[in-house]
Length: 333
Image (cartoon, rainbow, N blue to C red; front, side, top):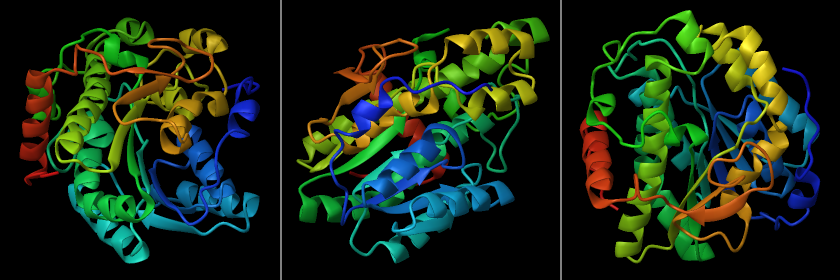
């Protein structure tokens, strides 16, 4: 992808507070908005934990980050979101590294328009990577979030959704959260994929709906318990990240159309303002959604409320029950 100049990010970043003495955990930091979030967290003085599948790419990215912010405390934690066992092991490692607790958990990592295939746990690769593994990670780290919230006055869980939550469906269907990987519509044809249509994109849509519905359900449960942990969600607009390139590589997007489409994108830094707002802005409240408008492609990240098509009791309860069933554990807030 061609480089896109950041328009709003420099002014936005100047408004962010110090995070000295705070601990930030981020999934998916090798590129894109997660890479920007990790760098900013380090520059603000936080202890930063990078949760990625081990690879030469993740090691190179972490090394580059240490070079950019040599004063930062940065830890690499192996975490393959396509494996629940790996997520549980990663959570244990985070607990070892963070006796002080976790002040911000940013569930950023995601894949898009991938083939209709199952993870080793039996779930759709997009749903497990984008939502179910993050549901499990949040469950496992909740005691650390509560510990940090008690000492610091608050902690935050930040989920990363997308404009795709609104299309092609605004209803979350339970079968996409079930052990049906490889049995959810197939891969579609090249023409449908090139136009962001077909079963690959419906599966992606369901994961981004799940990210938003998880935020709504977690927010409702945290408030009911009087917790000081906040639940927030963001979307990046149309950000110029590696996500699109990976989808082209996997056959989910047409190369020529994508090249034209991405001419309307904003930079990775501008795209990261949504999650960074949720992570660090002092006035960000639980239950808020940050992005360039509800469905905007570019522009400053602004807050708006959770939307009724997923923030309703039947959807929240179904999402929670199906996610618990998937990970095989109760998640009591």
